[in-house]
Amino acid sequence: MKKLHWYMLKSYLGPFVFTFFIALFILLLQFLWKYIDDLVGKGLEGYIIAKLMFYASSTFVPLALPLAILLSSLMTFGNLGEHYELVSMRSAGISLRKTMKPLIYVAILTSIVAFLFSNYVLPVANLKFGSLLYDVRQQKLAFNLTEGVFEQDLNNFVIRIGKKAKDNKTIYDVQIYDHSSKMGNVKVTTAKKGFMELTPDQQSVIFTLYDGYTYVDITDQNRYKETRPFESMKFSKQELTFDLSEFQLNRTNEELFKTHYTMLNIKQLNQSIDSLSIQRIERLKFYKEKFIRGYTYLGKNDTIIDSLIVQRDTIFVDSLKYPLLENFDKEAMIEIVDLAQKNARNAKDDAYNYGNEIDTRRQVITKHEVVWHQKFKLSIACLLFFFIGAPLGAIIRKGGLGLPVVISVIFFVLYHIVSMTGEKAAKADEWNVIIGVWLSTIIILPLGLFLTYKATTDAPLLDAESWKKTFDRYNIFKKRNPDDR
Image (tube, rainbow, N blue to C red; front, side, top):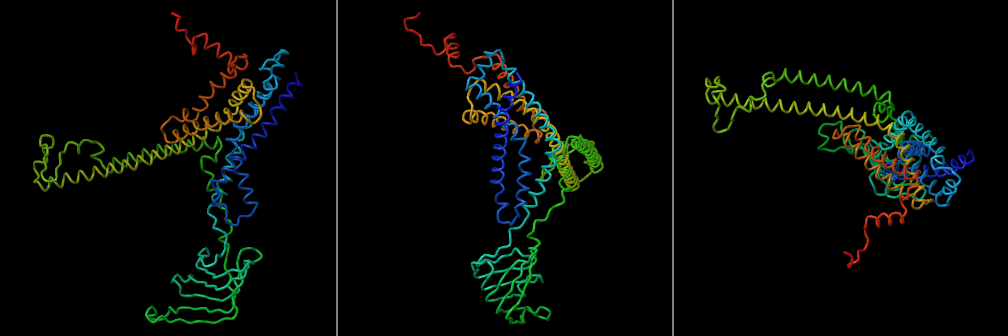
């Protein structure tokens, strides 16, 4: 029996590792396709790209791991069934339950590891990935001059070149506009030829210009806008240095991202949910007290405006309900009613704004709760997908990367769609958090139990002959003889 267990482990672990990294690679390609515009042309160093890819891959584990378990278990038992190895085991008195036993332990261990990863590793990976991606997206494009284009990437300077040599260093017909005085084009430098090169520390670029002029508008004289005085200086060689530090990747302090709900573990989520709930209750109490203080009468009597029938041309007031208004003339009555309407509108606007803030606080709490449940959902999903893939592979008896891949993708896509729909509905407070997060798991649980039962009892689930006999038994699709009465 031990040899059989080792054989099952070797048959399962190989496809599992292979499918896991394939799924991770496909998800990484999707990430690159989505953010390719934020990565290209910014002069990022290789290790920055490698770190970003590594952190991104870590955040994709919750998607790749269940898919790898489903596909590998389906491939393993599909191969065993296709080569009649399961039939040989059953003929030797080894049931499918005993065959699955070592892999069940592996699935349980994988579920535990998935929970630990989701609780301790994933928050750190989200923090590193989120902060680094933010910095990369904020990074400016690498400094590069294009012929005939006014480049404004350098602060306070605009540079235009007419032509660039093939060495990317020699430039011709150079124009440099200095806007450091914040007064427009008051200083312009032109040159027929020049060279540009980076300093050894890559922090600055040096322009060495030849045969040119510098024009400066004189702005410290009276009526300079009318007389337009200026001075010019001719030079045979001039060096200008420009700072490129703003083109370097500046890292943001990660402490600014640590409070996001996707970057917290279970203990931190519990603390955050408690504190946010207390803040929401205190804020709601504060708004109620403020509303009553600001609108004392409206806070106690919410029918005052409804009882007044107001028209702009003629005003009718029910004197039986409000006899005090009989003592006022028409203009005073209009002023009183207008003031009441104004107070009512202000009260309505305040209540609307207060309600929006309270709802927003509630949605933030809900998002924390969703992430809290997701940490347990990943480990449960890994276990359930094994109990779907293993019996399904034993039933269909097809291995390889053909039919198992198609079936696995169909199951996983449906699961993922239901999962995303439920989580979005929960975050929008349309569904209960438990129902929204666990809906996909609740749907696949009966399917896993059904397939496991059918596979372990050798039920002919996909046997065409058995289905034909079932149809014939109940006269389904059976042709009737016209002479039969």
